[in-house]
Length: 114
Image (cartoon, rainbow, N blue to C red):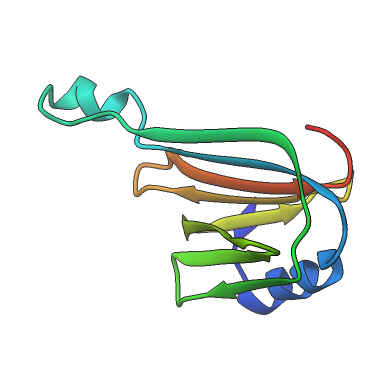
């Protein structure tokens, strides 16, 4: 993965508009949050291989970034994104990493299941 270049990600999002895509969306502060401090609450959200279709995709911010996907009945978004790649399978992979390099958020879109 490489650091996000906003216009490059936007160009890919624009090409994915109005297509049925599989999504992987994951957020976590990980088990390390409570491991280092028992008072911290471990939180996370996860969805994988649900089919989505969006009419608009946008990336905003100055880093870390937020990507929003405008659905027929609402929005999906991921915030805190720092890195990205378009892999050899043409999947858009976006991730957010903390200062220590740990994954905090992932948003991935593909025309094939993950």
